[in-house]
Image (cartoon, rainbow, N blue to C red):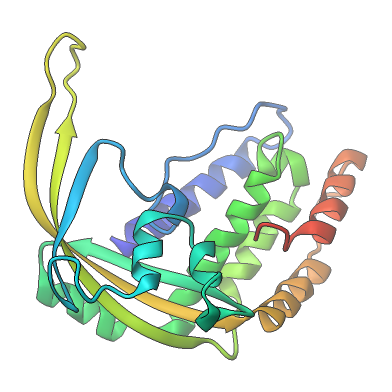
Length: 237
């Protein structure tokens, strides 16, 4: 699952690059699991029936509740993580032992750069009025690649937690006159919380920004957009 999401992101970036030079209104990709503010599927409802903390919703830590119900920045608002950026690795499915193996094998060195790159990509995309490669030129793909290839010192694996949900999923037919079908199933979701000092990550990302060189010179508009995002990048990051 983790590999599929990374491939989706990579293909999307390649498509953006292939479309360079054609002005167009931005079209945002489908949500992926590492975008907390968009992670809940409107076609499904769920309730937690068990967790690492016990039966029902008892014993669920605040950071998991925030992640399930809102923006990851809500986790960063907790006193425990003051002055830090946090990232959450997630995997889900019906095979509990397989998910446990994934959690045990989760590597900060290998897996965290993907999460940081997705957050960088989201920040650049949210600030773009056009396709990001039109907005920023070659800077866009280069910046995401640098983030994905980066090494991030000082990261801390804070906690791992799992929940078991009873999920009701709506399936709409092709005919709008046909009533939707509903399926009910159980699903495990595993979460890994990682933190890094804000100042440390900001310095790392600023270094990446300063080191980017593109094969083609940006237009005047693209150079202005890059200058602006470099100055305001950590607002709403």
